[in-house]
Length: 340
Image 1 (cartoon, rainbow, N blue to C red):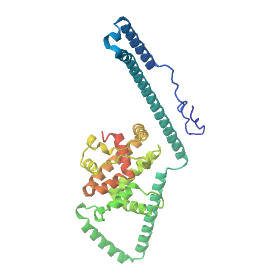
Image 2 (cartoon, rainbow, N blue to C red; image 1 turned 90 degrees about the vertical axis):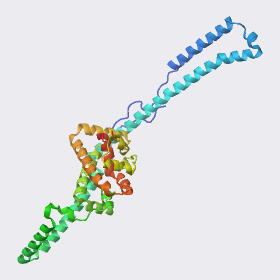
Image 3 (tube, helix red, strand yellow; image 1 turned 90 degrees about the horizontal axis):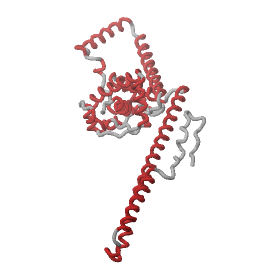
Image 4 (cartoon, rainbow, N blue to C red; image 1 turned 135 degrees about the vertical axis):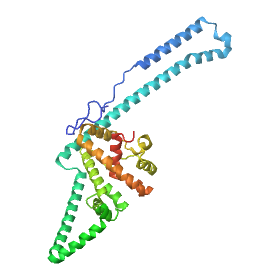
């Protein structure tokens, strides 16, 4: 029985015959081999009992029963083995057809997403644009407030205040101390929430955490790198919310922070989605912009996590591993061979 016909309006037609039941020949090589063995065995048995001494004289009344078992039991075993072999072959063919159908559906979905992205911007890019717009509004408001406060100061007072500020700055920033060293450290909860990015446009806590994280120079660099790779991945229909990676234990993450690579930290490459891995690997080979963005992101994540692990607890490491940024690291790290 044939399955549903492909939709003519779909992004890509389903391959012909993918849902059709394969035709099975009445007699295959397995049956022919079983028939040949059965005939050979029965012919040998008939020759043995015909040319040999009577069974009744050797074994008595039970001899005929033993003879029947000796003749037909091997034949039955031959056909049991033939049936099992044919069933195994049918199961392999069904498995291949099912995998082909899944790959075709996935390819059609990705193609449809790519065509839809031409007319509308990906959701991740929209969220990040909203974040940037909010940050610009905040900066504009602060700049306006500062300008009004300065305009109201008399020149003499302004000069004296500037002199005091210069002296204070020189005293506090002597010996090359960077200005960001004087700012309070970014809380771990805000940092983790910022790496996951806001869930929706109404996620006020997520936007607040992201704004605080963007004020930290190192965190802002990683967030920008993550934004770039997430936007590029979304162009191929790959979204971190669709991935369900196998989560590694915190001690494996700590080994990675201490410099372990390869099989020792292979559990970090927990992304098993073959379509996402294949699409990402192809993009990595063919698109130099994507490749540079991916390697830049992997370096920033490596540097960040080395500092993060030194002060983080196991629960915080587990929380960070579930963020969208960490899932992008798992996907790109496995494609780049970090865990091989």
